[in-house]
Image 1 (cartoon, rainbow, N blue to C red):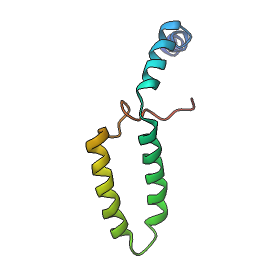
Image 2 (tube, rainbow, N blue to C red):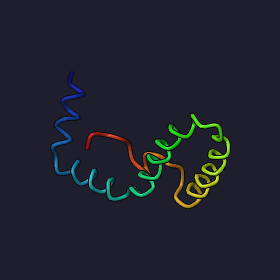
Image 3 (cartoon, helix red, strand yellow):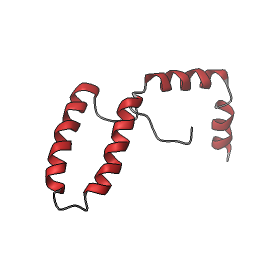
Length: 83
């Protein structure tokens, strides 16, 4: 497929490497780590009877983080990939 080859070729250029470096430098890795931890902990906690209390606590903390850092989107915490 021609488009895939064009993308692969572009990823080898200096321009792409600079764009990627700037993108990675703009990410909030502390926030990303917190979101991952929240997701893992949520999977564990949802099997417990006091899950509603846990949820209320973390919803409040999540709202605070959103106000401070913004929504956890690809512009703030990135898109998961193998790199």
